[in-house]
Amino acid sequence: MNNPLKILIVDDEPLARLRLRSLLEACSEPRTEVVAEAGTASQAQHWLRDHGCDLILLDVQMPGPDGLQLADAIRSLPVCPAVVFVTAHAEHAVQAFELDALDYLTKPVRRERLQQALARVAQRLAERAAAQSVRQQDESEQAVITISDRGRLLRVPLAEVLYFKAELKYLTLRTAAQSYVMDGSLSDLEQRLGERFLRIHRNALVAKAAVRELERHAPSTNFGELDGGEAPSEGGEGWAVRVASVNEWLAVSRRQVAAVREALAQQQA
Image (tube, rainbow, N blue to C red; front, side, top):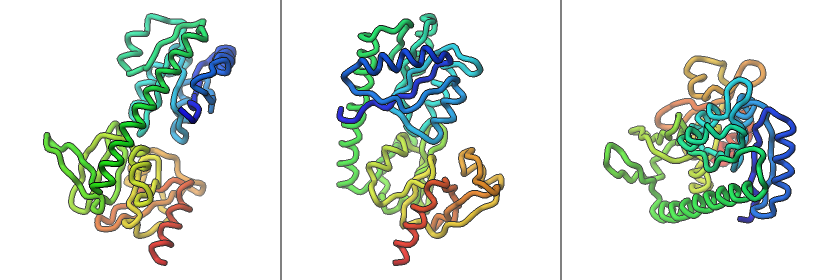
């Protein structure tokens, strides 16, 4: 693995977070990078709304929502990080693995044991990347998305796809004629589909050719639902794009407004 594992440490004890940092620095392979720390599950969840990581080193017992609740909540993220619990309470191990935790370390953590957990995470990421590469090659050659619908396998031409939208644990694929529910993640699709699609929001990937206009929208019930719960921008307004054929409006995060403008300019050139 060439890139370091990006790690979020979540523990309410500053000394525990400091010790984990020290242990990670002592682990030579795979390489790691602590990208953030959080003292509560709520802080971690807030950070994860706008950032990504490969691994969360997660305590169980914390003020407010505990680590088990956080692990359950992040399963709905478009790309769910690997979770390794690091706690003094071994009695939660069974429940942790029911939440798809990759490992469970008890305090005080030994460097050798942490090294094993990191190796498992790196292996999982490598397997995911390999599977993604196979899917990408297959679908790029065929220019279709294969989905399962009521027990049938359907091949939807990419040229017909208007957008993908993350909703809870699934994705909605929208064409001019119909909506389909499919498994997967927006981040994987974004990498596989290349320049044809544009990420406009953490929960939406839109075909560039389908973007018709960009404008400010005052907050409303419908817009709030499309926005996925993101707070409106300064001044109480947010941005949205109108999607061709279906004339639906999808929320645009502030950081993606410039990219949407550029895509519209390219269409007009």
